[in-house]
Image (cartoon, rainbow, N blue to C red; front, side, top):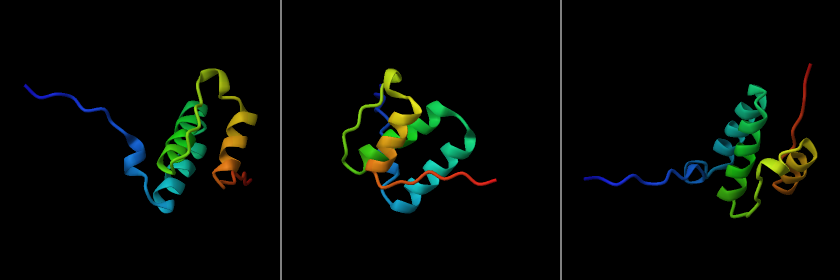
Length: 77
């Protein structure tokens, strides 16, 4: 019998390029939960413990976390 392992996405996003790709994809999707999860994954991959539970997933909270990671979110028309 095999055991299931916990999937740890931060182990798959170890380079700046892969992290940027994840964040860009999440931002372009328009899915706030995906964006929040992606920011948390990048933070964890960088060794930064930033808990983002459902109560903390406001736009100001996400922008503050992104800023602390050195990530700038931009819009274009």
